[in-house]
Amino acid sequence: MEQYLETTKEVYKRAAETPDVGLCCTTTPIWAFPGLDIPKRMQQMNYGCGSTVHPRDLVNNPKILYVGVGGGMELLQFAYFSRQKDGVIGVDVVDEMLAASALNFKEAENLNDWFKSEFVSLRSGDALNLPVEDGSIDVAAQNCLFNIFHEEDLKKALKEMYRVLKPHGRLVLSDPVCENEMPDNLKEDPKLRALCLSGALPLKHYIDMITEVGFGTVEIRAKRPYRILDTDHYDTEKPIHIDSVEVCAIKDPMPEDGPCVFTGRTAIYTGKEEYFDDHAGHVLMYNQPLSVCDKTAGNLEKLNREYIYVSDSTFFYDGGGCC
Image 1 (cartoon, rainbow, N blue to C red):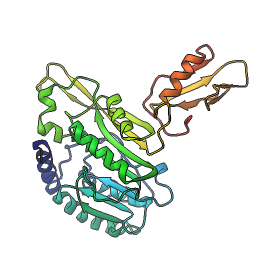
Image 2 (spheres, helix red, strand yellow):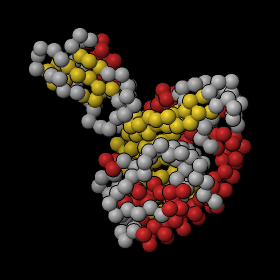
Image 3 (cartoon, helix red, strand yellow):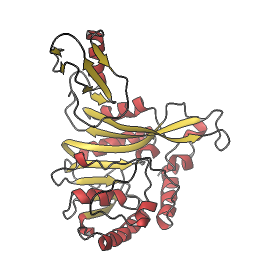
């Protein structure tokens, strides 16, 4: 196993044995669902940079896979929407983390009348070779794990997620991204990779890697400031700003003209007619906002800039789009 993966296992082995509250700084508030009480230790072991739990993904009692279990908090939240035996599968390469989350689920049973530990199936396994059958999962998720991987391993991890998802299944990710050039000395530091910092990719490159695997639709649901690698504490000549993003990649067929990537852009038609039809499947009603993917936004800007306003990317998208 590569050195950086060994270092990662050691970091999270220690974090399983003794909760490390400052290890990651989740930028999304913890969802508060009726009747859900999350054990304190689970919250302390919430080693992520955002949230992968979105209620609109979790309809009709879905089968869910979560890779990199942490203290089990997001698995518990997923189980809230899939109250069936083995409805949620949690995979982790660190045995100590699996053991710690199993204990946390026992406490969760005492706090929540509806929850049973059997709702969650904990499995020892590797993100690069998932112990899960092809096409068996409705929603797959990972939080601040894939950022650790070097790019070749990241491609393997994404392909594995694509493999296990059903058609139109959803891969929900939360990872750090960085538009600054990451110095090689930081990029190759196994400890900084384990801490989900120096492996941060530019957002476009991150999205390109997702679509190259085959995901036909990608949604950027949130983008927030996350960390700064400053010159006093890190070996860098200038500060490096890192954001966290929450992304949903959908296993839709790939359109002939390329993937639909939603980065929170909106189009509004203000012409004299009742509506505008671009004859490519998109109808804009007068003065009614329509969320559009980047591809459609670019095409609309070319067609009629005078009567069609197209916003810049807000990096917030919550459905209801053009595709």
